[in-house]
Amino acid sequence: MVAVMIQGTGSNVGKSMLVAGLCRAATRRGLSVAPFKPQNMSNNAAVTADGGEIGRAQALQARACGLEPHTDMNPVLLKPETDRGAQVILQGRAIGRAEARDYQGLKPRLLGGVLDSFARLSAAHDLVIVEGAGSPAEVNLRPRDIANMGFARAAGVPVVLAGDIDRGGVIAQIVGTQAVIDAGDAAMIRGFLVNKFRGDPRLFDDGYRMIEARTRWRGFGVVPWFAEAHRLPAEDAVDLRASDGAGLHVVCLTLSRIANFDDLDPLAAEPGLRLTMLAPGQAIPGDAGLVIVPGTKSTLGDLGFLRAQGWDIDLAAHHRRGGHVLGICGGYQMLGRMIDDPSGADGVAGQVAGLGLLDVTTVMAPDKRLTRVTGTALGQPVSGYEIHMGRTDGPDCARPFAHVPDPDGAISADGRVTGSYLHGLFSDDAFRAAFLARLGAASRPGFEAGVDAALDDLADHLEAHLDVAALLAVAR
Image (cartoon, rainbow, N blue to C red; front, side):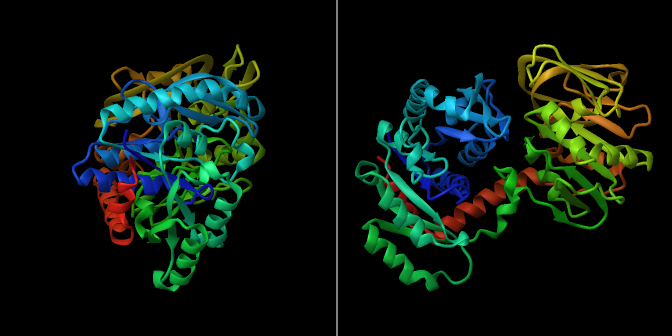
């Protein structure tokens, strides 16, 4: 086994991007590399070639390695459904729901699956680069931990600790982590790095030496802010970005359990349109040409959330003004006349009226459809993936949005309201151009090539500012 683990002093310190860049850098050295994250919490999921689901950050890291995503790369995925509960995915398959308090009791069972997946990856590759979750300094979570030091010690994987200087207090972040973790955990850490520095890194020389002196850990470098990070998919909804281009105004409703929001990345990259991520409490702007109701982990819960913002009234007014509406996955289900959940698969059993913009009805069921698809839409090739519960039927389905190869989605009689179960559809240049042309907007090709170029740029960035060779040599 040859592996190294990047843990962080907190959430959102840039672990996912660091691992993606290191994966690409190590792959360019001729190594067979695989990413691994024992436990992830995200509603942004990817469908794998083996028919399961993992966090999309690990799918991006797999891409950096030149690999197809596999469920072993993220064996435990938690998909939040409420403030206190989440669906638990083990090796790509849902095994149930758990409240935060009850989840602790599941961890011994989950650790076995985590170690099995890690062993398979380790046997198949020269190097595994592991990403932690949250922070090892959350010592209240240390008993039964499977995401950070609990995994590192069980698998014998050395750790490099990443701090985030952009949020301030990075000396305290790193030194404080050493102060609160136990000696056995601290012994797993082989060094540290400082991420997201803005300005001249030499200005932090004294602080860097202070961390080395106080921790006796070696430093691997200071990474300046990576300005091209916006070209890579965001992992967390808090990182959702708007764009300020001219032309067509596209508005996406930021639902409380928004899922698979990287569907929007190709639109954010388009210079010929303006993308607004509409925050709760804000009205849908009158100049919106297209409103997107995105995917969600909780269709019924977010339908109630949408109505609480008054967006149902705004959507009806937008449609009356001649505006267009696109619903993706859970958003598609909301646009129909009714959602029937006889078994409580999405929450409380019963029927709930939808927004009525499409003449369709959705019936929820416990089974989840997980599949990659290819086909055509608007006369252009399209590819994507489905990841949803429920089946949708009705008169508007006689005008399907796509054929992949079975009919998918529905279009209203006036052609201005569209629903689809396809995620990732805007990544295809020809389809995106055709879709935007119907709305009077031009498109720039090359989105997918741009993601790969950004991964190369990220690897170059890390090579320039970290001692990558020494960091990878930590692996054993």
